Amino acid sequence: MIHFNNVYKNYEQVAAVQGINIKVNSGELFGLIGPDGAGKTTLIRILTTLLLADKGSVSFAEKDVVEDYKYVRNNVGYMPGTFSLYQDLTVEENLNFFASSFGTTIKANYHLIEPIYVQLAPFKNRKAGALSGGMKQKLALCCALIHKPQVLVLDEPTTGVDAVSRKEFWAMLKELQAGGLTIFVSTPYMDEAEMCDRVALIQEGAIMDTDTPAAITAKFGQTLLALQGKYKQSTIDLLRTMSHVKNAFPFGDSIHITLTESGAKNELKKQLEAQGVDASSLKEIDPIIEDCFMDLMTTV
Amino acid sequence: MDNYVIHTENLNKTFGKFVAVNNITFKVGKGEIFGFLGANGAGKTTAIKMLCGLLTPTSGKATVAGFDVFKQSESIKKTIGYMSQKFSLYNDLTVWENITLYAGIYGLSGKEIKERGSALIKNLEIEDYATKLVEGLPLGFKQKLAFSVAVIHNPQIVFLDEPTGGVDPITRRQFWEMIYQASERGTTVFVTTHYMDEAEYCDRVSIMVDGVIEALDTPKMLKEQFKVASMDEVFLHLARNVVEK
Image (cartoon, rainbow over all chains, first blue to last red; front, side):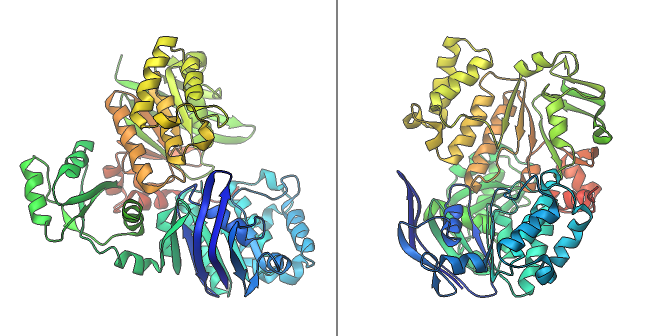
């Protein structure tokens, strides 16, 4: 459905993306996961015909996004990272505007937005600028869907959004996917990778890995330990000086420790206890995407 | 004098009929890392603005670093540091110019600015960027620089509003190491975040829902109180089912 083929883009001296290859299948919920400055927005803007690549090509439904840009614009729903609706138009006026821009009506495609729009309906006469963050986001989503796109492209829809609203937003995306939509979404939140069918992990303009979340964590291929409990910075510093320890990072209420060789757990436990650190909670764990992302960052 | 640097008692802020902050009462200790959590629209920003001396409360009492938020807001501004994700540094000034500007605003002398500025640049290992525009600095460094600038005058309290949003996972952790160091030097850290793993890094956490502080304790005690395994679940438990008005 979407194919990035060896895409490059520079901004003056800065190489934003370098040799990007991504294929997104029809019906897939695909996540582009990486921090600010990794190149996510550049890729999305190239896909949505708002920016030209320096090198390489992008196709959408087998059509080149540069040559067939009108086809792309008519068939892609795009929700940009910054709120880009008309603040001084009401909820209903915004939706009407986007529908008529694409030669359709709210009525014709209401079924597509109904589950989301019913939550907005009580505020349909309120100006978009006066909505809460969560409601703005729902309106932007409705406006991106009203012309019945084949693909929904979302640039960091959950940035700056609290943990509860983030979960709700992903539930909405899952529902839209179940209705047959292909979804391409970017996010800096590593935990959201788990909600995608496949993800590309992007850092400094390059893809570090593309796969299903389960396959990425399965590829970690190293022994990962967790030391739980209220720890001190000095414990992390100590761990980093120890043999067999490749990395030690805080993870919530634990420290995640990557070993240079498997089977060194008991030795590490002894070493820690010799230094007066309570290591009773030390146990082997399965990595999550964030572990993998950090490992790839330090090794690729 | 006790060891608390922030005191609030029934602090209120209303905008017309809307109660943004509803009778919040809490204390924050010296050197404490205090996580100030809440859903979007819960009243966090309003509360922070009052504590920073930028917004006059409607009623109640509060002191920050011993100064009254009603009468001594200018003294508060000189005693605290502030950094937000959205705006912290001037992109069209160089690293040195930003340091000089902020340190000057915070009242450091020319000699102090030179000494602390050089130490800061050396600490962050950004010597190559010192005379370049901040615009060209990688995001991770920008956030670390913004934090260093916010504490350059050794403030009693530093307020951090979503300091790690969008930052890569390794830099995010390095940023927290800087927070720990500041805390060990005795600076109180008042921080908001949407990353629930970061809530675990705080000494104590408050969770605001609809203008009210619904819970306030150490992460460990909060998890025990709600019988869940993570702060993520504590947050979901409290913040869910808050409906739009």
